[in-house]
Length: 546
Image (cartoon, rainbow, N blue to C red):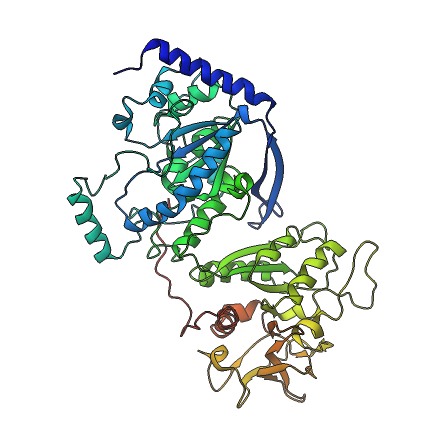
């Protein structure tokens, strides 16, 4: 039954009054994050944040498919974590004058008598509707520049078979279809019947935006890689049709099964979808920009946050380290890659992001930084958080026999302070060292999977002796006619932080089995993770990833 006309008129006037009164409200302030290539065609991306202020009356949030049930039990569990904070986001935005649109697809029958549903149905159709606004959108032209980041062809369920079977029985016992069990939006999300809208139809949602003069749209809900991207009211449709849209990246989840390509943890799968969105679809924001505090992190997401700083031109680690991160680290680590600028040698954008990292890996060579940027490194080194360095990291922040330019500073003591090393130079290239385990070294798990009789490397042997007190060498390198040099060791920094350094790490080292194993061992051990026997196994890549 439709709501009575006088009452409907009251609701409409109430909504118009709310929009009008919100014009004088304080602007909503956001930091929009996207990704831009370091240089066109490089395949490497800088994170970019852009501050924006939005008028609440010109802003809407769309809640995509935050259903009361789902066929994937773990999706339900993650949704139960997400929903209460999402409700607080909605309450705050609504209270500031923003428009709230609830979009639980396939559930409109439940809302047949809802004023919020009737408000959506009664909104006049926009004079101009995008041609395909009532249809799913599976790709937009900008996405052609990249590869879709996960294989979701199995539907993305990450339940264990037994728990999935038990959950299906539970749903059936509740009188639900185990494959399509949703009937309404989750109860934890409140619908304000006097102000909100309920719709799962692209033309209705678009008309609401037009009628209310909405310029800015926030998408939240589930699932990022499916409904949030593809629904008629989803990110792709909004972006390609010119609406200023963002994803609230911590108020979402994916349908991704870690048994499928790219064989990473569920949470890394979500991160990679978000990364794809930031590159090719639209920017993202986080809930703390509305509520304060910190962004939501799911309770089972215990991955150490690893920041990798790459700023060297000699050994191609801008290629080898991202590949290593993609293929080896996605199961266990939350990785942020920070690249040096391709045009300004002594600039590393977003270096402040290391402040929130749990562990830092550095591959840089002879850069100097502004005092503000250097402070992030100094503060991290002063903490007890672990730091790893490979190859040129020993002379990362110092110039050879030159002062730092005005406005920049060097840190020539970095090698001694952070790694306990004494790098002076290297032996001539072409004299390949033999790498051996140091007898009775305290390497322990760091040496897991390395051959007892040693292995070769094409990297020129660094001159790093003598090491400082507090170091514990685990590998030596030897070439004919020269004394052995330590090539890998741990170090306890002043203040108690642990470091690991290895002078290995040229392009060929990454191509063999032993250096990646050593680096993975060190990252795991210093992060407090069990050191696995061998590198993670990877299945075949699908022919079509979208």
